[in-house]
Amino acid sequence: MESVTSPAITALRKTPLNALHQRLGAKMVNFGGWDMPVEYPSSGGLIAEHKAVRGGVGVFDVSHMGDIRIHSGKVPGGALAAVQHISMNDASLLAIGQAHYSAMLYPEGTFVDDVIVHRLGTDDYLLVINAGTREKDIHWVRSNTKHFDCIIEELSDAYTQLAIQGPRAVDVVQKLTDANLAGIKNYWFTHGTVCGLKNTLIARTGYTGEDGFEIYVPSDRATSEEIWAKVTDAGRAFGIVPCGLGARNTLRLEAKMALYGHEISDKINVWEAGLDRYCKMEKRDFIGRAALERAKAAGLTRTLVGLEMIDRGIARDEYRVCNEAGEPVGVITSGSPSPSLGKNIALAYVPPALSAVGTTLLVEIRAQKCKAQVVPTPFYKRAKKSAPQSAKPV
Amino acid sequence: MAYPPQYRYTKEHEWIDVRGDIATIGITDYAQHELGDVVFVELPKVGAKTATGKSFGTVESVKAVSEIYAPAAGEVLEANDALQNTPEKINTDPHGTAWLIKIKLANPTEIAGLMDAAAYEAFIAEKSTEASA
Image 1 (cartoon, rainbow over the protein chains, first blue to last red):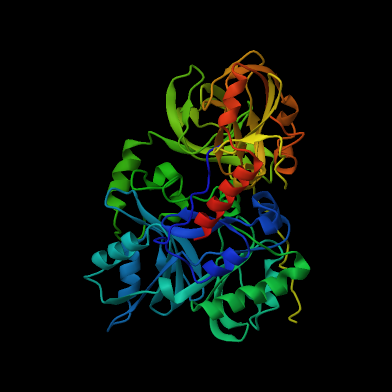
Image 2 (image 1 turned 180 degrees about the horizontal axis):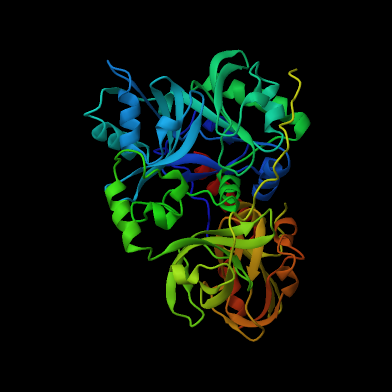
């Protein structure tokens, strides 16, 4: 057997919770230059972690994510103008306390990175970016906002970021904060006291397709470990388990959330990735807009689809996709067994003519061509609650 | 989990249990632990040939595909097809009911070059130290 987890190398970057993960016996992997937990055998492993998030609650260390604050210089409005210039969604629509999914694009209309933009104040924004693209992103933001009257601050190392995810996440976080979480809608946030830490950012965001919160606390090791312990203590009654990047990946894949380097990259444009609803062409000019206009007029040559395997076999990242005649037509961007569905699922780029639901395609798995079918996405959608459950603060 | 003293082990984490010129092959407890939840197994057909150090099948967990390398050359007499429906047995009983294949050895003497249980346990202990250093 080949070893699947490469041994940790000291040159890898570590989050403030690294020692804690080691003590918990997590399996660690190199993820974009970071030494991160992929699963915790003590939680029961990847599938158990995945199911905990779908049915109860799990906690993830996502401190490797980066954070860039863009706020006013001398004249108010400079930060908004900068954010509008470098990202494709319309930040002018955000209320204070609201966040949205967006992306930074190259002039070609392809992806620098996808981001969550939070509006912190009147002319004050926080962009949460990917770990593997941190340096590239900050450089991109700085060099493309030079002509705007705004201040760029990199806060990536200032925060330990915990994601508490699952239908019971609200109950867990409510035990730890005075903020009224029932009043925070999906993709909104507030500042409140969490475990005695004043003015803590609490956002109803996540990367699992489930309800949940992300909290941002000071990144010193003592505080980080203390907050982790308090979250797991508060979650014990709800069956909380530590979750690694393995479950994070299967959860986001079921919800068809893009992963940089897979569904989106510097080679893929917004229309191909199917992220049209987050791209506001009607707002003023932004980097990538002209190329996207041309791309729209030219028409798509490939589009992202969901596949479900019919034959026995698991489609994996970068496997080739063929038409029924066996001719190569596309590629898998992410593929995995789906713990929620008990099926083998994948995302793939294929020509639009082969993208209709029900189309049969073949995935090359080692020497074999295995049958798969285009299915509707997302693969998994959480049940809508009629009203958020209010939990009593304890 | 104990490593049966009568088995022999490879550096790629397969075990082989030799009885005369018939051998049973599986993956070790260390291997299943490294893989995580096993969800898929692909095994050769009866009559297929195995070549020492060459892949004869795959075991997949949720997150990865692993090739399984033959500890010895021979001909496949039986594949454990029950694993197709219960691949998770590899996680719970890797040294027993979750064996992968039985082969007729082409050259029974080549087993002598493999590690015994004590040597294998020392080998994986060293690997764990490396990983946590």
